[in-house]
Image (cartoon, rainbow, N blue to C red):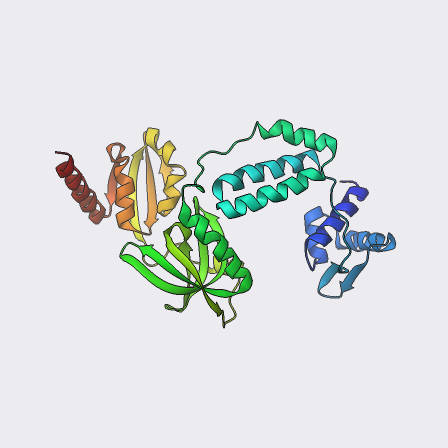
Length: 313
């Protein structure tokens, strides 16, 4: 990247956040701190009102904005890919908001960039659309996101293996993992932080209350969470290689830990969060697999198969 392009990119970076540290800029553009200081001085000399506070970082004076309308071809394609993914795997509310924002992005593109986007639009697709069919996600995600910003308390009805329970939660963030959206929140009942799967939230409502305590950040929670919970069940199975290749994504939903592929069969280990759910999943490919441990899983699978036989006989 030449110096002019770097100066432009640094200016855009400064406009993207309230406060930017010099080391953050140095890491992004792979330059020394001395180069960053020199570039900042060049921007100041060009008339950009940059405010710097020792030990904190740089910011641009409130009200000063230069729209970053010069996108590269690769950035235009990245926008398009993000739109396709979000349209299929987010809630309808945020999907529509992103689509509206994309119209604004397209409006400021140069003619050549618009042509690239139009040509690529028909060449990129994302399947497995779930948003329109899952009203639980459509109802819960926008309210959770708003509650994080407002620091408000929500009341939820949550489906568990033992039934439906109700509780008040104070959300701190959301994250997407293994095909599911999860809300991280402080539960006022258990007095602990928990991950709540949005598709299990049967209802979400605002209590009108404001969170009274200072919470950790989502990043801190994810860094501290244990890899496996104390409630998980160790499971070891062997799956024929011809079937194992089709479990690449599914296995992560059931506590996948590791695997060792042999010539004909793959040995997989899990820390299953729910042995009941694992047994139901295992039955879908049981004709091409075997259970090594635990014995309780074998019994559970046998019982389920017997129930199925009785219903179809």
